[in-house]
Image 1 (tube, rainbow over the protein chains, first blue to last red):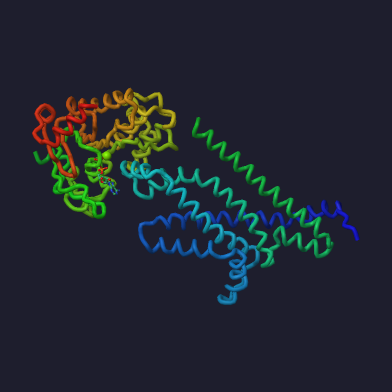
Image 2: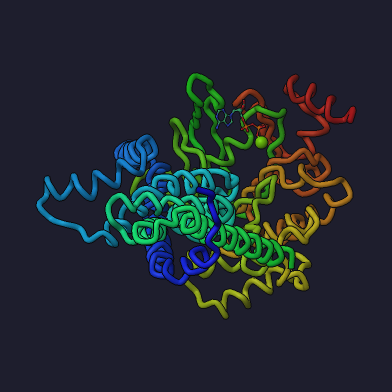
Length: 223
Length: 247
Ligand SMILES: Nc1ncnc2c1ncn2[C@@H]1O[C@H](COP(=O)(O)OP(=O)(O)O)[C@@H](O)[C@H]1O
Ligand SMILES: [Mg+2]
């Protein structure tokens, strides 16, 4: 039997994938918002003077970066409820997993960016009487944040793609939705191709948006 | 005399690990005095200056700034830093802020005065250093000399009682040195207390009340400029002045 590409199966996939696309977007954005908060907190903790917060941050970062996200997802969704007796709905679990996972990478982005700012900036801030936290808030952070944007955009793309792993815990994201369509239509080639096209469009859009944002910020300082 | 004492340093020591950088320095600076510190590179000039506003923590010794012991844990070091401004060799302006914001952030965030009031103060300070027209520019649009004048205005924005200058003209192209020294001369003539680490011997000779020579972490000479330059007794100083003169 010869393979025939079924154009209508390909095109008809897109409307059916809509729900999955929405889930993927919600999980990615929700996860990254919390992931950024976790990452900013942990990244700054890793720069703390005291050994206790530093150790906590390092432990978290190494534990997450040293284990596969798939394992983290299985552990949180199937493992933790066994121990704690509470079930987390798949969507919430998805957001939590993306947040905890991206948080570790974002922590390193934050730490690196903050550390890359000339110590003279901190000294100048302190020399006019600003406190440590004021110096971070008004002097170091705004400059560091600008340097975070490219790697954060990169993390955005990585996390978006990583949401596909959440299909194993039954989150109705894009790939899972595709799989469900295939289960009915058996058009694996056409449907998974459509899924891939959607991921590609989303990641290219992010990359594009990022370039625009970077150019915009570049212009602003060269005013 | 006691009441006019602005800075008093007693038996200051500073080690970086095994390396002893400052080996027992004693120094008193009175209100209104301009003191220039000269000495070879690596002799500890910056370290002494940075201990005064505790950007470096002394290993031992006592430093009193405007009556406050900076080593005392009761002392609000942020307040001391508003009384002792600092100007850096590399300017260290805040590149993400306009020139005006650079000179108003201290008054607004530290002194907690209103933005309107701070901007009035800021503009008058920029006028003083001859940069009123640059208020809305960003630091990277300025020449080195202009940047350093903004940095001086920023140090002045907290209305400090003393300003510490760490080689303020060493990063500048030679033709830009004059405009910065001009501003410093004006400050000196207005009675500002100044401690200036510098290689500008002309400035030290003309403007300073006292010149100090530091070598290997020790004050080798502390004298009025005339005696200091025309009749140096310390052989190390004579050697140093000879080397500087050759350049
Ligand atoms: N943070 C530091 N860690 C280790 N050594 C330092 C540090 N800062 C300065 N030093 C050393 O202390 C000595 C004095 O430095 P410094 O005060 O900057 O000299 P100067 O300003 O007279 O050129 C130098 O030998 C320098 O290498
Ligand atoms: Mg120095």
